[in-house]
Length: 137
Image (cartoon, rainbow, N blue to C red; front, side, top):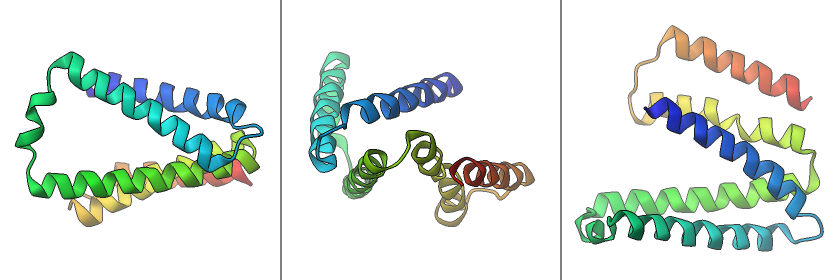
């Protein structure tokens, strides 16, 4: 089931990039990011309330709060840089450069989460790296 969610995520991430490239024309990239963020916040809270999971907010541990806040800050930084890159660059080059996060995420999973380094991950990461650089240069 996770694969279906992951593929849906990939589809909507691609759609996000195309819609953002069209929408950001003539708009300050930071302002565009802020508008998008408000929409995401409203949508996320609607889902929380529609699923009835809002009552669980008190169950979140301090450690989880810390890392969720840090993740949010990283997301904000990523979106600000991404929207600026998308505004001044070609979408067909910015999108693959952004998706290099896949390789960086794999490396960070090895380092910080102590996930197993497998031949498949190394070969796949190398191919993604090669493909990224072929697309952007």
